[in-house]
Length: 123
Image (tube, rainbow, N blue to C red; front, side, top):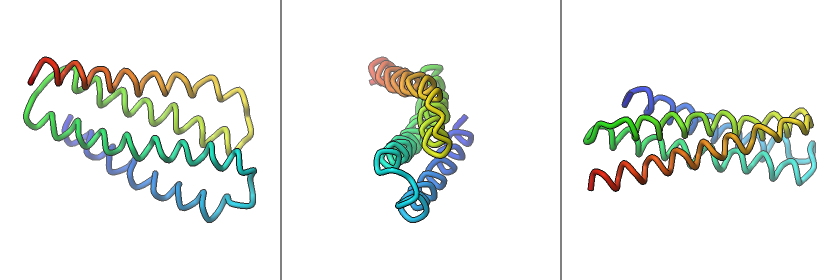
């Protein structure tokens, strides 16, 4: 899982920076400032959780555990659902996609909770 989480972190980090640049240079002036802010929120959360995945991978090198694996997969799901839904919502204007965003946010929370519990049990 260490390799998988590091590869996902690198992919999310790379695409997060690329999407942030795309928003700043390609979307500015083409979409409303409100939609641009929504897109940037997706980028922000994606990059934060790319870093969180690096942390999970580093922890897995020292400590094995189901909770750390769940945290990594929850962060991954969160990026896909939360950030992904914000990107698609912004680019398509399909408001119904907003239903998916809180599911991704919940996945982020599950990941952080699992990380907390794993730390509590290990330290």
